[in-house]
Image 1 (cartoon, helix red, strand yellow):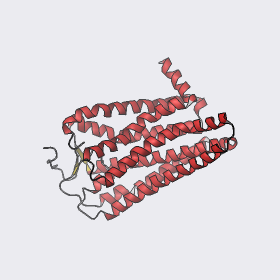
Image 2 (cartoon, rainbow, N blue to C red):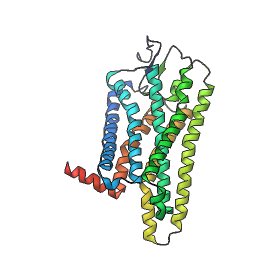
Image 3 (cartoon, rainbow, N blue to C red):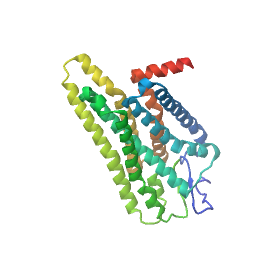
Image 4 (cartoon, one colour):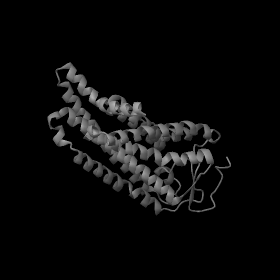
Length: 312
């Protein structure tokens, strides 16, 4: 409780409390946090290494897997090191600039992650609905351009968030009951009018996440229509199998994301530590599971990863 009543002497410093109500268990909570983080890093770096080493994997699908791996590394790395500093060393202070930088990088990478998932859905649509034109529609250069467009979109949409916050006055008691600087958590620290910040935050959530989900749903609607027209049972199963990995990744990511967003904005009856744990799991579970899912479901990647693992 002493940490909760502590007011930083530096007026430009925020205090991240970690997980309110579970301060005594921070060391124990850090064990699964660090394990998920390490497993995620190892899996995603393994994907990057194998795809980079194997010329046969220099294809659009595997370049998209590399993009997904990079965003997974970025999202977990944006929050876990600071969270572990809180859990292990009670280092709760973070400067205003550091807080806004963490918030910006976290949301940019998250928006980029969403863009990659949309591109992967489009990749599966072309592979199933236009297989003969796949090589001409989705080249490596075009995938790189789509990745660049996704990054520019994420950067431009998220940039106003820290800029709008930097213009606001903050209260003297700058204690954020969280493990990282989330946009809405920082907005609540302001003593000024935050109407614009709140509205823009909702606009970003609906435009970026909502539009991406609509595009993914559209892609899979067209895929399902094409699959239902296939008469051969073997071809039918093969077409579905090409989508299973992406479907699993989407379900995990979207489920945790929706739980986190809804409980944070509308779950006032839910205890704070449950909301914060759910928010952290969104940035820990998908990065850990995504390389495992694609490693198991993608035959070419599984064989190449097995080759390097057995060699070690």
